[in-house]
Amino acid sequence: MSSGIDNETTQFHVLAVDDSIIDRKLIERLLKTSSYQVTTVDSGVKALEFLGLLEDHENADINKNTNSNPTFPPTGNFHHEMEVNLIITDYCMPGITGYDLLRKIKESRLLKDIPVVIMSSENVPTRINNCLQQGAHEFFIKPVQQSDVNKLRPHLLRGKSMENQPNNIIINSSKRKPIEECLSPSRLRAKLKELELVQ
Image (cartoon, rainbow, N blue to C red; front, side):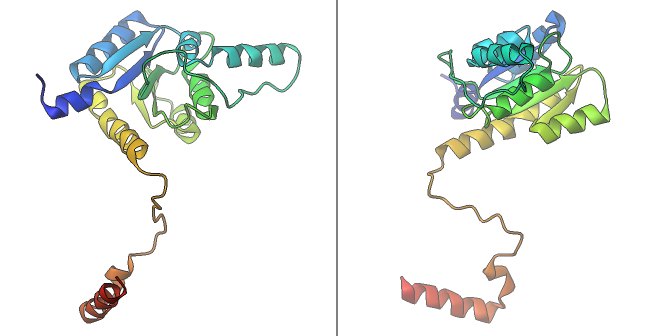
């Protein structure tokens, strides 16, 4: 029987997309070494099919061929039985690039919150910036190493904790300090006593 930490890690399912069999096998091995469950596919089209977004992509291609404005509809259904917790994809692939796949996922109402990581053997700053601006959580330069895979866990844990939060929690996103940090110790004590009286 594995420990609680290992058990928690094995529930994470990663979809790895790369047209290079060597890179695909490498990323699969690294992910499995880190106790992730891995599904690999060799193209963006197969990734869309696995995620249940292929029909929408085919409809976008039909729209493109009829000279209408091609957009990816923000819909899609999961056509697989396993939840995908993270997608890691190569940038340069024939047909649908990793960037196209990223856009498609982020435009999907159902999949937009899945973290996406892009990999490339080319260190092109504009490409990296475009991917990060489009919603990629990380951009790895190939060959991917174990230290890169270790950077995935916080994204997976963040996604899991967001799933487990009740909808009525309000997160304070303002840049202002909490009131307690602005009060002197004597004023803080008075404020705390007020709160105790109210309760």
